[in-house]
Length: 111
Image (cartoon, rainbow, N blue to C red; front, side, top):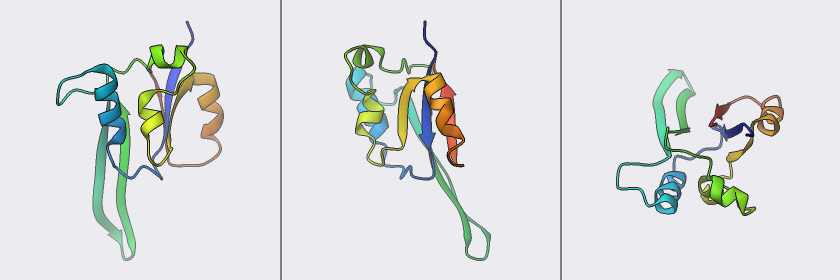
């Protein structure tokens, strides 16, 4: 079985929650349950003219990487509906290659 991962470029995540809604709708999950959750850190001032304000999507244990969708050649629902296009689901080894490209990214191993 291939290792699947989720890469999130949280420099660009706007906190719109489209990934949460897309996952919930795709999998028919009840309100309050989803395979991904967006968390906001901040805002607070670190020093003058420098602020901490970050949104980051975190996969939950319910995330299966949209195996059915990806088997049909489609993107995972969360990635397909991400307005900032900062969320990617795929083979872990492919996603690892993107980590060196820039800071402010998080990589999760889903399975």
